[in-house]
Length: 463
Image (cartoon, rainbow, N blue to C red; front, side):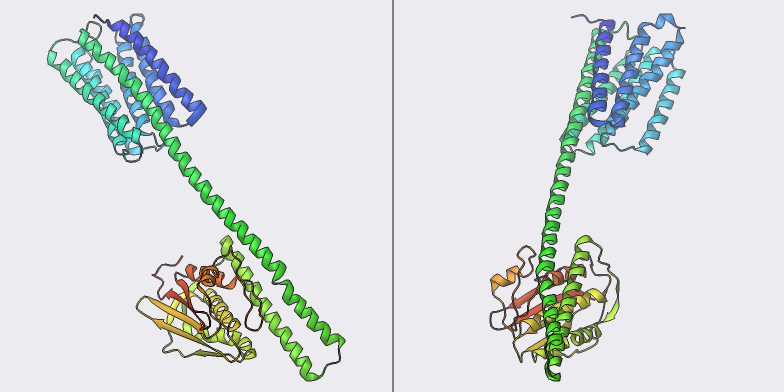
């Protein structure tokens, strides 16, 4: 079978037109990525080289040769740089290496342009260099994309093939001319044609794989956003439920007691009792409002975190003072005997909210004449604070629900005190925000012990 050089050039030109059309289609209708145009430009340079070569007799003898050599060398650099930019990254350092390599190769071509053998050796070796670099960068991403290893292998074989071809031409030791080359040399060109075509199609497949991975990541993000939206909707519904129910009742109580004071002739002791009930109801309502505000802030990310070094004992004593009237109304003793004044690095307001909710919850579920013990123990890295009571306790089923916003778990206290079911959920989230952990140990009829840990130092993890 005899193959002539001109026929091969026609096939190569048609192949280049196909690849240019393929990459332009991918650019305008799919990816809009700059590196697709870079590859198309490189192939266009090769196509222009073929056309210029066929009409070389129209121009001065050396002009088509010099233009073709520059375009051909540049096309190798453009195609390779486009292929290794498949993730859209501009590798600036490598870009300057390619520019310098093109200039150097072209300078060498100008020096040896009279010797067609050395000229072709340099030109073919340059394609081996550029495609070899592209092969290496694709190989570096073999673990991320399955088509990267395939493309890398094709380009490596082609790079090696071009080196062998350059060495074969050099060994001839005589003037080498493509036009009068042997059938074996023409087969080299045919193989190059198939490699270029295969690389172009393989590159498109690599882009498709990247698209699939991108779509998968976006679907995961969408799914995560969907879950967050569902949680926000759940939170919103819970807030509306609390506002509609738990805030209405205490205000109705306050209004009812106020009307009794205004309408009835009551003695001093009875009036003081009504006033004390109004005060207690107002204080509980204010506490509920604080919880609602803090909960809303925590869900929207607006809750500020201002850590500073504080004395734990002082914060606990202040919280006991705030809840003393509630405990006194049920004749409950609040016991806290600090062994030493432990200092920790945390947000004072958030810690106060946690302690106030846990102590108020213990008072709510402790019978008349009961007791609540507050204890703090430390080790090298953290402090453990426990609030234990001898109240009604909880079953395992109740424990599993009290920290879950979806269940809206509420129970009446020992004196029929109401609640929103929000306080414990808020405590858990606030403890987590401070870098600690909250849990409960309880048994029906034997009381409950709420415990939480906090890091002592600012170096420990805080969300």
